[in-house]
Each structure stands twice: as structure tokens, then as C-alpha cells.
Amino acid sequence: MADGYSVHFLGLSPTHVLKTPVLELGWFAMHPDQVNQDIFSMAWGYITQLLDQNAVSF
Image (cartoon, rainbow, N blue to C red; front, side, top):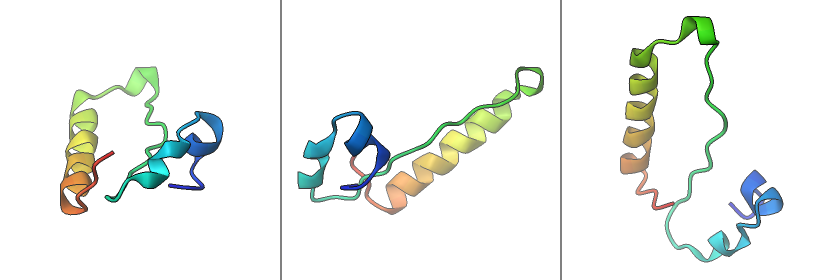
């Protein structure tokens, strides 16, 4: 995370002291004419699975 986008552009440099994995997510967007709530639910479910499997704390 020491070289992530958030560190450089959002002032989150103190995250380097965290002893557990950190996940920096990018944008998630869909075309307004193609919005499907199931896709959002699936994406968040997958992200939650990644967090749990890798003990991500932040």
C-alpha cells in the first residue's frame, strides 16, 4: 500500500504502519441503461470473500 493511489493522492500514508493486508479498490460502475442489482450483489459478495480469505483489515 505504500505506493498505492490513496497514499499519494488522498493523504493515507499512515496506512503503511498496518500489520495486516490492505485492499485498495478502484471504481465500479455500470452504464445507467444496464443497471442490474444482481451484478452489484455478486461483486460485493466476491469482494467480501477476498477480504475474508486474505484477512484484510483496511
